[in-house]
Image (cartoon, rainbow, N blue to C red; front, top):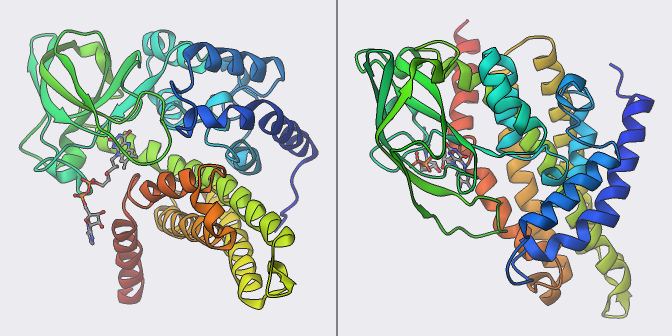
Length: 394
Ligand SMILES: Cc1cc2nc3c(=O)[nH]c(=O)nc-3n(C[C@H](O)[C@H](O)[C@H](O)COP(=O)(O)OP(=O)(O)OC[C@H]3O[C@@H](n4cnc5c(N)ncnc54)[C@H](O)[C@@H]3O)c2cc1C
């Protein structure tokens, strides 16, 4: 096993770190709901222009799409460094949901879909959203409960349904919609993905669902489809392949979430370490108290383990393996680690940890969702346990 990071990747990591420190972190108050009005489109455009100028745009995309052409393994430290701020990945065009959506389109889009959707998305000219989850009684943890239907009408499809948590949909140029095209077979055979411009008649953004955490660009809207009429050419891949395509998106997307969140957790640990190094109590620096030392040690150890799990799962995916068990293990472990590390950092910083003077309180709120989206921890444990039992039976 070779754990060394190639020198060209080290160079990118160093430059991303400098960019995040000098250009990104100063803008954090606008998404942490500290500065009123949030991050304006002009601020984001200017930040992204600086990222392009610095040669840091879209590390994960191939050069023909304007990216740096790094492999899944190579982006591990780059995404972590960009992820030191919730705004960093957005600046570099490697944030969710666009990053996962670009990956999906890169794998499966037709030439026409590539021109219309992928290229402007890769250039940062437009944004996208992925509409899978539905409110009860529709699909949530269990995709078999998918209710949104698409019915064929000549050369067109007519879609009706109700989604929510369509992250980024407000202001997006298009939606990636999962709908059931064959109600007589299980979802993994009867679901299809459609691409729909947001201004197509029949798409209603009902409301931006208010959530805890930072201001995420485009929110997490509730969306309804009323007789949304799309041409057959709006299908991504083939009819009935929706579930298979989603799996191709979700495996790497779970890992990239883990990479970015590791960056936030690492910074939380650094903030806690700085506070503990300067603050005194009972005649000693906080770093001199064993209870604090153990919190720092546990956080550093868990982050180290998470990084190795990410690297190994990325390596398996790069070998062409599905790595379902490993990506699930990674998702559970890193999501729970990130929540614990931020929680400990708040504890170490005492009352200051609760204030908005530090970013910890916003991260604490924002990280909570990571244990739910892209599969709740319980669902991933179910996947892992199934494999354990299967292996035992064999
Ligand atoms: C901030 C945020 C952003 C999101 N962005 C998107 C997006 O862009 N696109 C999209 O389509 N979706 C998105 N989601 C939705 C997300 O993927 C779902 O919330 C998630 O899949 C869980 O579905 P659910 O909320 O319906 O929970 P439910 O299915 O109602 O499950 C509720 C809880 O039940 C438990 N549970 C479920 N199954 C099991 C089981 N087998 N064993 C034990 N316990 C179980 C878990 O604790 C789970 O949290 C987002 C969610 C959040 C919070």
